[in-house]
Structure formats: C-alpha cells, structure tokens
Image (cartoon, rainbow, N blue to C red; front, side):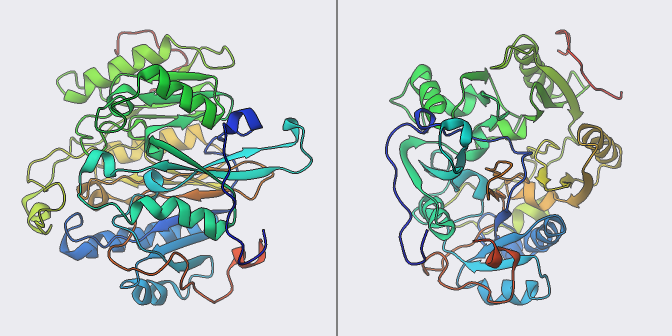
Length: 421
C-alpha cells in the first residue's frame, strides 16, 4: 500500500473470503509492545514494571524485531533507553493501559489455496470495553487496533462484538479454544447468545470448531478468566494446561474441569486432544508494599494486599526461534516450567524473565501473534502501554535503522499427558 493512503476497510465475513487466524508459533515479522505508565495500575509510577518490560523487549529482540509503543510523555525516555538496541523500534502512540494482546487487532491471513496469487494479511478490529469496564476511560485503547493496521498498512475488518485477544486461542487448523466465564460474561456482549458468539468466531477467525472451557484461571478476575492464562495450543492437537497437584488449591477444580473437557474433545481435524500439564507457581499474593505503591485514583479497580495473583506459565511468548517465559522466583516451579516448555518446543531457546511485578499489575506476559509462514506477519505483546499522550499513532517514530524499515481431574483420562511429576 502506498505511503499516505489509509488502510482499506473491508466488509463481510473474512472466513468466506479465505481468511483464517494462524497459529501463534508460525514465523512472524515483528513483535509489537506497549510501555507501562499508568500509576493506578502499576506501583511506583510503573518504575519496576518498566524495568521488567525493557528486559523482556530486549530478550525478544534477540530473536526478532520489536516495535515498542510509548505515550508522548514517555517517548523520549523510552527512545533513549532503547537507542543502542538495533532490533527495537520506538513509536509514539496514545493509549490508556498496556494490554496490546487484548486491544490490538487480530491478524488473519489467506493464501494461494484461497484461489488468489498473492497471500494477504488483514486485521480484525474488535470492540474493546476494558474487560467490562475495570477502568472508566478506554477511549484511547479502543483506537489501538485501528492505529496498528494503519501503521502496517493492512486492510481492516471492523467488528461490533466486544472481544479481547487473550480470550481466544487457535491451532491454525480450524480449532479455537475459549472460556464461557469470559465470552459469555454479560459485561461483554449481553445481547448475544453462545451460538451467536460462536458463529462470529467461526466467520471471522476461519475456524470450524470452538471448544468451550467453563472457567479460566483462579483469581483472573480482571479479565473474567481469559483462556490464554489457563491453556494454549503448543501444536495442532496438543494443548498446554495450567495445573496444580494440590487438591486444596482453588485452582485444582478449575484445571480438573478443563482437563475433563479437553480430553473428551476432538479438534477440527478429528484428532483427540492431547494435554500437557504445566504446574502453576505459588500461590502468589499481592504484598502490602505492592498495593500501597499503586495510586488510588478512583478510575480503576483498586489493588488490595493479600489478593491472589493469577500467575501462570502458560503466558509465555513464542518468538522466531525462541520462547520468552515468565518466572516468579519460585525455584521449583520456575525450573519445572522451563523444562516443560523446552520439551514442548525443542527447536527453540527458552529464556526466563522475572515477571511478578507484571502480575501485580493484573497483567499478563503473553502476546498477540497473528502470523503465517510466507506472509509478513506481525505479533503483539499484551503487556506494556502508556497513558495520556494525545499524539496520533506513529506521530513520532525512531529514525535509526531498523529491520522493518527494509521490509515494506485430574481423575479424567489424560491422553499423551507430559507430567514430569
């Protein structure tokens, strides 16, 4: 698309045009991230979170290019911080908070099998309402998807349904997993039935099978149980599931019911699903210090000491050739999780980033990859963003050379379960 030309708005049902949402492990062009800033979500004016996000951006950039978005206020600081990182581009973008996976576009692709000679990528621009209104102004966040497709110059499919990227996960071969706790919550789409929501997923993601899991991870109250914190595909027919061996843990019942659903399900290709268990850390809880460091603005959900954190190793990032995984300082389960991930992805290097501050901000470590093999796909990380800058997306971008500048029950039967314990 020529410079200066607005991204094309497409109408209709993407699946009927040959589009589909690819799997997250497919190669992609870059990773998009935001920069944390909001003081009523991140303690100490987001200072500790910014340190973690910087380390994560640098870790990911060892595998692939990163575009890091920051508000007008934070842009000079972030640009200077990253000026010696040749694989990181810094872009100014206005936003309310830092959940790019949830507010960004869902990228979909179509290829030669659709009867066209050139593959195409497009972005779905879902409605966003701050997870049912956990903060009272999301006007900037609701424009993030539109801004990103404009920067990338890809066509956009606008949609009227409220949906966050973290509420769905696909295998790239026709199967989607999600949770009833989230997608059927009346704070999202109260006038839509389960069947209507499922049909929209099929028509826009290009899937033919939707597997509904009752609930997400324990304590994941802000997102109402996003599936991406509970389980995910690691390859077609194989799902990684957050697990606990402690039957007295509140998470046990949730994981057991998910296991029961998954092991009794087949995917879109007729394969019986295999489940790989990965033990959760902790339990971890918000400390008094963490809660006291968050500004009580009255405009977002307050953070209370003793609140359980929805910590999970499933929220890892799949980079080109690598896995960037969360760590929590729980030596036993951190090491166990790395071993499980390395076995699940033997051809990728697993790197750990300590992320407790991220979960204390009720955010998660995962991403929003939307890519495909022979495309120029793009991915998004769901955790970093900025506050009150009013500049248009892309008003100011780093001018140094960047690769993208050149790239226009537990008792239920378990099938194939890897469990080292």
